[in-house]
Amino acid sequence: MGSTVSFEGSITALAIFMLVNSITPGPNNLMLLHGSIKRGFWACRWHMLGITLGVTIMLWLSYWGMAALVVSFPAVMLIIKVLGTLYLLWLTYQMAKTNFTAIINEALLQERQRQQAGESVIEVKKSFGELPLSFGQALLFQWLNPKAWTMTVVAPSLAMFNAGRPWLDNYSLLAMSAVINILSISCWAAGGHWLRKLVHLPRVMRVIHAVIVLMTLYCALTLWL
Image 1: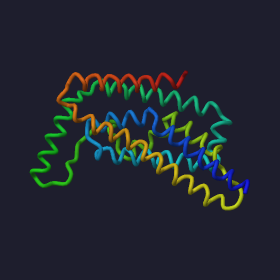
Image 2: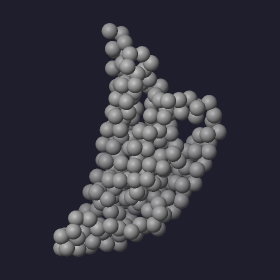
Image 3: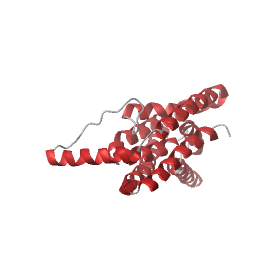
Image 4: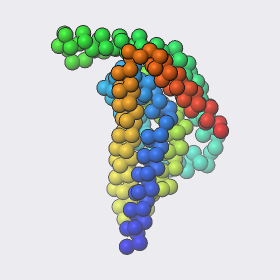
């Protein structure tokens, strides 16, 4: 009876931890918000899947001992913070250069052309690192994302089972974490898609743009606080 309560308590603790870390503002969510404002929710699908798979792989490796390794060698996390900060500063600069109104109008025009031509998809050529990210870029970014590292290193300590059916338990936890993650980040992409409706209000879009840029810069700076 006691082990069952402990099991359920661990599951609840992990679920809450993953939800809080996945849905609160961070680099991934701000990138999705920015990308979905530019291109819409559907254009962010590979970005979202890349984030979720990347985090899941990191969590799986943490269950195999990566968490203990990172904790044992603080220099590893320092390197991650430095690289993550540099990337976020570069991303902030790229975001600051974006003209939301022009990009959204272009995307809406392409959408109308697609509908008139009866095409299902219009491929948009993007430069490397342009938001929304590709599946591979989003997956690889998780290894430079200190928030993802913190989440995946701490998570195993909340629900780690060494008795009974540990492999089944751990894979169930991975599946639960992946579902929580993708549903959480989808909220940010959906929010960005909704904000596209305000494109006819340039001043409002400029304010939204400035807030996203400043929040991304804040994420870079808070890595050292």
